[in-house]
Image (cartoon, rainbow, N blue to C red; front, side):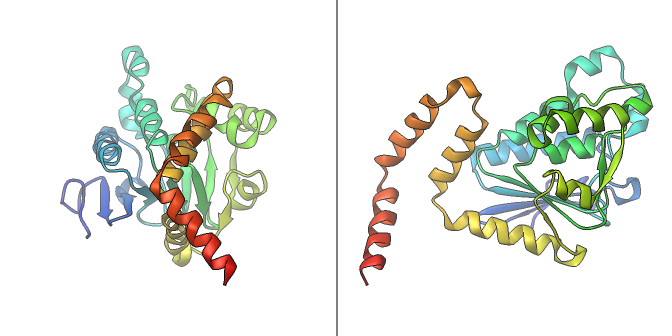
Length: 253
């Protein structure tokens, strides 16, 4: 059932809701989907919805662009208190912590805050037109909405610090090579490819999917205890019994 967060086509975030997934499209094409305060507000509303009713989220951008960065006009006016408030950072943390997977489908530019939004996703796929990076130091600031710690978790320390210090924008091919994205697809097939991933996730047990993401995001010191506690709950679930029984019955045929 299609719907939008604000129900108007001018909303900075268009939201389509289905039973097992939500498709959210950054929708400021005239600004190359630059992330402004209104976009952040809409992301918080969407996160609240997906925290209450967990579903897979596909996040993409309108007009052949994911997000060209934070809105520089707004960013220029922000001061120390705004930085400490973590306006973008807190929204992206909330997105990363959603119970079900987040899939970012990236086309065109994903720069600055747009790249950091992509880093907050669990799975990133892209078109060959992707250009992604963090040019913040060239604007007199740092990448403070997650890049300084998420990027190294994704691509490793050596790659991450080189990209952050140089502010270099990389192509889709390099992003694939270093593991920043996992697949490349033509632009007209990108969203369909994201749905294929969401379909594969939907075939699995929802509780096991949520537990897998929660365990994966847990700090290293929490393992293996967190794994064992989650597994203990799943071992008692009727769905585990049903799925394993069906597997054994198929194997016997």
